[in-house]
Length: 141
Image (cartoon, rainbow, N blue to C red; front, side, top):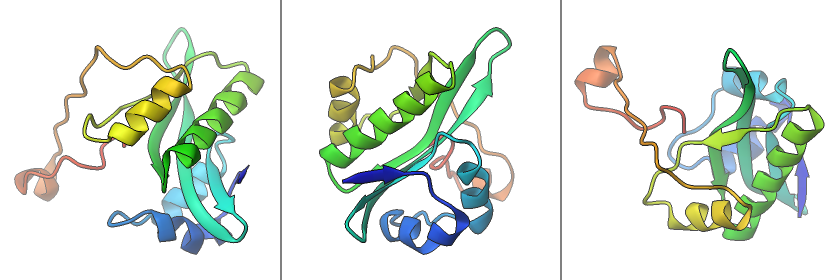
């Protein structure tokens, strides 16, 4: 399996694994420039992607993975390893993401790659019409 940075030309490949939450061209353009986002491929078949960016926390920088999709645990582990390596190469020593506890395969991939899970919980408030409909998915995931 190959893990590579993507470009806006990969929008269709990324959306083949994005499921019910397709990526916009603007999002792909943004994350393609971060240096921490990757597409996983097996031959010509897209297997998953990681959307991540460095976020300055005032005293330190954290690479925040805002979305991670993969067809299996090996893909998720490979994407996590790619993001961790890119963070380390950039001199960033913190990598984080918010985990939906229902994503058991992702939780196992995180543990396998040395991530600690918890104890913080993400609190979300969505404003506007999405909030009025009760939508909370997609915030930092």
